Length: 157
Image (cartoon, rainbow, N blue to C red; front, side, top):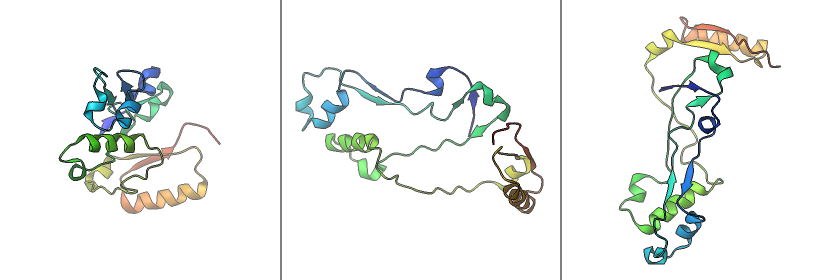
């Protein structure tokens, strides 16, 4: 779990995910039949960094004091990618780049310590209807009666 950092720095709000050591590095790598096809492409590197995704929000949201769970997955599991090979590396990058690929999991359920709900503060979104708030309060009273809840200070309707 991480504490969200608030900033207006564009490079943090919109971090660069992929870097290539040269123009069309990914294309060259994916089109190669084997490592020999890449000879002459010195220092061909493709890097992905997702470490900053979800960690930053604009400063105007600072009042939220938000914490987040960051869960990362891979399009290939350890059993599928091992032992490593050139073809498996190519397939891994094809899957990463394929925006239409279905995720490996559509749902993820985590067990949490019920004691954490004792300190929870719930902020109702500005677009919640009165009926939704009544349902939320009913669930709060049933499952975490010690929780603090309130309306958002934002006025967006």
